[in-house]
Image 1 (cartoon, rainbow, N blue to C red):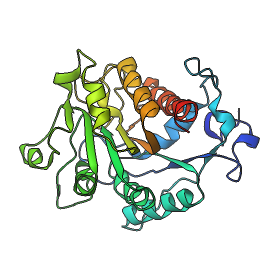
Image 2 (spheres, rainbow, N blue to C red):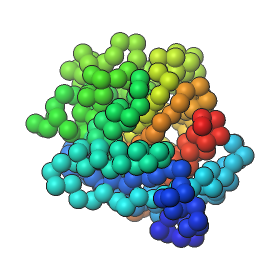
Image 3 (cartoon, rainbow, N blue to C red):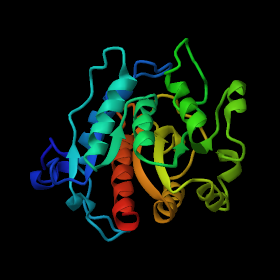
Image 4 (tube, one colour):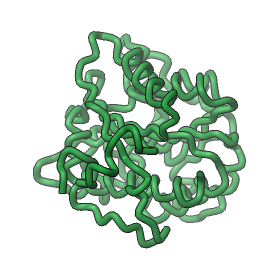
Amino acid sequence: MNPKTFAGIPQQYARLETSKIVIIPIHYDDTVTWQKGAQYGPNAFINASQYLELYDIETNSEVYKRGIFLAPSIKKFNNSPNKIIYNITKKYLLKKKFVTLIGGEHSISIGSIRAFGELFENLSILHMDAHADLRPIYNNNPYNHACSMYEASKKYTLVQIGIRSMDIEETQYVQKGNIFYTHEIYNNNKWMELAINKLSNNIFISIDIDVFDPGIAPSTGTPEPGGMSWYNTLFFLKQVFTKKQVVGFDIVELSPNKNECSTDFLVAKLFYKLLSYKFEFNI
């Protein structure tokens, strides 16, 4: 294994020039309001990835052979994280890479969505989270993690899945018919086709790890009971990748706990699974 690459893949599959996929690790959690630690999420993700099996049974594929470049970590922000994340995301998009981001807190999505929105026409956002994140401003900061989807909601179709916690103020910013609360969807799959049909063809996916039930993903900054299950989530995402054109994604809010590594591995597994879906069903 090579710990300087994702999942320890051989260097021949990890060079920028030949890789189809780029991972941007973002070590940022300055606006977290409860349990800090998301800045360490990218390292925990990379460390856990070293123990992945690189053959995906479901898709009968080894997606790492498409090439996965682990970009230099973003750790310095100079009070302008959104601008820095935007510029770096756009740089790799202009190289025609499939760009993914690993957080870090959820506010990192603001800058990256701006870049994707410039380069992909008719973009929509699929947001999977326990929280709506639709506050215009929180703690005197419009770029707080609780505001991560507000700007996107004003520019794009925003479909939200797994929401089970929000402030009453946020209800006025929900796109009508585009939010799927966990208590309404947990015991059936009828909502999946409806949600997918609301999305445009080009989709950016943003997944906050707290969309999962804390029983399987406890290491996150703001856990909420009653979250989604592993296979139900994958069943939905597989359909998204099959029916729509996913142009990129982020996974955020992993806040590692040295006494609990299963969430770190869940994030690594989820990341690799999404790449497998992308390059088997969605090229």
